[in-house]
Length: 174
Image 1 (tube, rainbow, N blue to C red):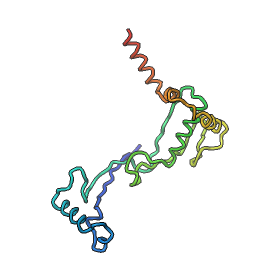
Image 2 (image 1 turned 180 degrees about the horizontal axis):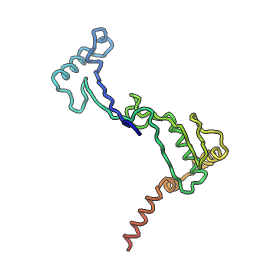
Image 3 (image 1 turned 60 degrees about the vertical axis):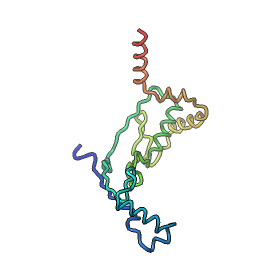
Image 4 (image 1 turned 90 degrees about the vertical axis):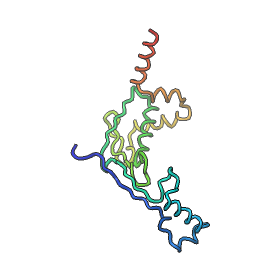
C-alpha cells in the first residue's frame, strides 16, 4: 500500500454566543444577563477548566475515506441458529457509523461483500436470496426468544481463549 492510511482533520469551533447580535437577544430568556455572564467568563478566563470554552481548536486523526477493510470471522462448527445470528449482526453494519464524532461524518462504513463458505451472500445493498442464508435467519428467528445467555456466551467465546483458560487451570491443579 502506498501513502498514508490516516490523515489529520483540524476543527475550529466558535460558539455562536461569541458573535451574538442585538437581534438575537429577544430569542434568549434573560439574554442580557446570560450573554454578559458568558462574555465576562470568556474574557477573564474564569470559565470552568473542564469546558472547552467558547472558542477552541482541535485535531483528530482519522482513517482516510475509501479504505477497504477485510474482516474474517471464523466460527467453529456453527449451528444454523449461530449462522443466522452472525448474518443478521453483520448485515446491520451496512451504512453503520463506527467510533466517535459521527456528527462530523467520521466512522461511516458500508458492507461491500459478505462471503460464507465461499458463497457470496451480500450484493452491496443487502443479503441475496439464498436458501441456506434464509434458513439460517429463520432458525435464528425461531430460537432467539429461548437462547440462554450461557448458549450465547459459549458461541461467542474465543476457542483460543477457552484453550488458554483450560491450560491455566491444568497448570494450577498440578
